[in-house]
Length: 201
Image 1 (tube, one colour):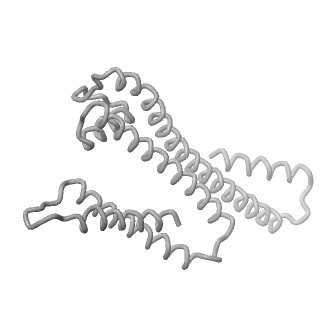
Image 2 (cartoon, rainbow, N blue to C red):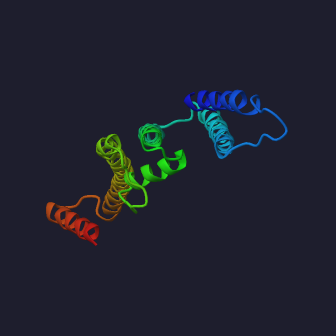
């Protein structure tokens, strides 16, 4: 729903402030207009894809799909927060340092990724003061996204490993039942030892 609202708002913004405000034949669109066009196209594609997924997958969910979807929502919220902080930081530094917005984005991404080429640096007192909270926010948010990815991959791996282990133990139990339906305690212990030695391999 949010992507549809974003697409509609971006389309209205592009129409009102871009297409409808063209003043004459010598008018040319700037870089910002074309960035907005690409943004509308991207958000439109994402909205259509999400709608198709929602209508085609609705009601066909199992527990595993719900967990993946929940993790995906958390990740998307984290990414949205990261880009929001990055956009606000870029806007603030654009105004404070009198940079172009694209230069402020470049500086903000450098700060978030802790690259620091040194070609852009805050020179005003306000810029020097604000760089610390913004860098802490963006770096921690980026770290949160990486932690979410690692957590998702490791939990899925552990689930897969547990499913395989249960399947393997069930197969071993069937094999043991077929070979020796009435095993003694010593034979059962030997079988358990054999299962454990196979798992260690």
